[in-house]
Image 1: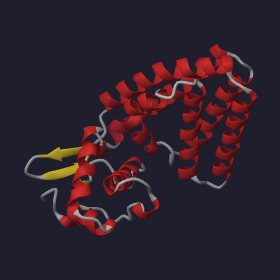
Image 2: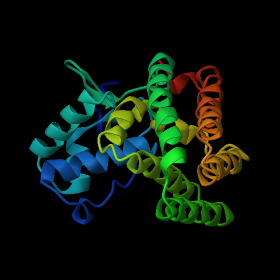
Image 3: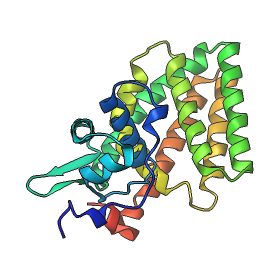
Length: 237
């Protein structure tokens, strides 16, 4: 079956681009990217341009531009004479991305623990309360967003504005793959406990303890993804 067969495109609702900002191509790109990262468009999903155009109410040009950008990020694979599809996971790319992220984030959390302000600690504590509320409400998607925001806060507190972009570039495949873990029974609660230890070390101005807590947190992610390459071969190359 061709990748461009209309029935290959999953029955999902893409984000409303009317609520997004930027050019039309930028909004289409953000809608598709968020659907890919949220696993609404799972690995291997063929992308039919006309179906996307119909769902979003746009012409083919911004869709083509968006798919080209996503291919540059490694989220979409363009197959000559056949079409395009969401890329499958690659454990080698996940390990490489995790290695890069760890190198950056361990340095970041150490710096923040040594230099944090009371206002920054307040923001982290507020974020932790939001994480707890999401767990209480069984809101996995909400917990995921607050989890990501916590890491963004730590990067921003270093005072180096390019750090988050650099880390996110290498982390994109890991970020997508970790969606597979959140529905696992108890994983979100374990991640919350790991976050709590990190924030406590920052509170206590203990760079080494913060570094070790972050290292454990990041390594847990990759170690849990490894078995999925065996149990879900449909999602991995």
